[in-house]
Image (cartoon, rainbow, N blue to C red; front, side, top):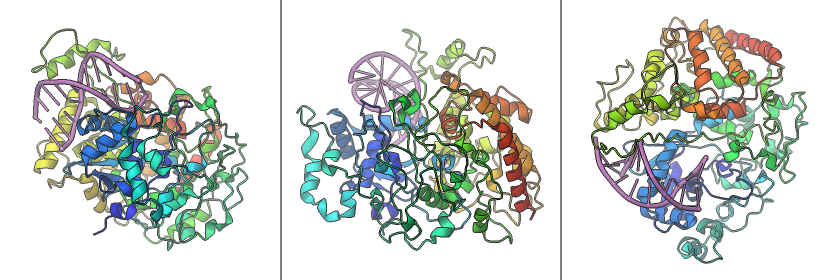
Length: 620
DNA sequence: AGCGGAACTT
DNA sequence: AAGTTCCGCT
């Protein structure tokens, strides 16, 4: 009966804490949604449902009303709100859960992975619906002013009683007046009231994670050593309070110092950390939404998502950046317990995380290495010429007209709806719900090239149909595609690992779509064993390029990727060029993965890591 | 319902 | 940049 959602799913608190630019405290819709989601009072209006990050809007009108109230847009309605929500698709913040009305899903996966690659996901437990656990939320606020901490602490959560009907009422109906000067706050905000940072926000996750988890195994991070960086963990960490499985984030709070290190694991790193500078300096354009994750939480989350990741074919690329991380191996034959790996990270690497972007002038001291930025919004492709009114018939025609404008001078693919989709992240993207994923993963090269806007679009639609009707066979040539009509592939996939690795460890994660030939073969023989290193290397080089590339114009993000390389390397390079870094995922990566100042070192580390992995894989 | 283009607003 | 508003299409 109780779905995770009902029970009060823990939400990623980090998700709430976007730093808002110093003066602007405009709440963002997704943020707002999260707010509602986390409050019990609104469970009848909107609530988590089922899958990770999946939620259902039970009362669209009400949600719209609330949103309108918050934004002082009385005219708001679900139609409009949903439009806004749809804009998130491309940004990958959300995606629609097909087949389920009013149901959407947050994409936490990649974010987590990207941000917490160092987390050990080796252990097997995989709590399904638990989203990442938040933490830190109020702890780390951006100094300047983060009034927007919407609901910072979950007082009500902690003491349900508090939020009695009165409060609730107050919260809900009363405020809609934007007119009054008084109402600066949203309903929610008022309702929630003050947050006291002093309190552990973590409590917010009521019962989310059963204390039963063997912390050390699950959450163990590399390097038990003391963390000079400031990630001093409270001792109690070891034995979490039953009530709050997630100890307060160690992140230094008020001072505004975020531990520069990513995690304790990284703590060993000798690298001098830059003190977090709360400053406004951070307010670069990228500052849009940064979050910080609590490693522990993330770990948990990752645990939960291991499967997911597996299924989604998340690109291991992210891991490359963090050689010291342990990649989950779904089916490791007989090696010791997975957790062991954690212990002896033979790799004394200084994690790449500590490294900064060399080239860029961006303030290297991002508040936290964990921050990530959501992807940039889609581009507006407005190329609608002036008055022609072909609207009805011309979906295609417009495409053609579009041609010249792109920077893609050479390519000259006529219309290109460049969606951020295909970048690195996208691959891992949750969105994969459909065939498209398979296409990308399996067919790669060619598919990409032809992924023109139009195609894409149709593709999607077809997919929808596929899901809706249960037949998409025409499109999906993919061998794997199951004709089943399950609307929610995500889940589907989730439950059923696409390719049960037989004795071979080859982590699915390592299936780089890059190499068609290799990835595909899941032969029992273990074809993939060898390629592993190779893959890593390739990835690595790619990454390096990417990094070297530094930040370049973001404008390019929308470019169509791949001009048609056959060569893997070449292709990779292209990807780097195009997607790397700019579009959504890339951006994240860029932020998260500081280029190695010491690439050389990194390289060797990588090698070692690779070697290790390979060894582990030797089972093949 | 849901999607997404386009113009417009903050 | 992140919606908001409007709207045609499926």
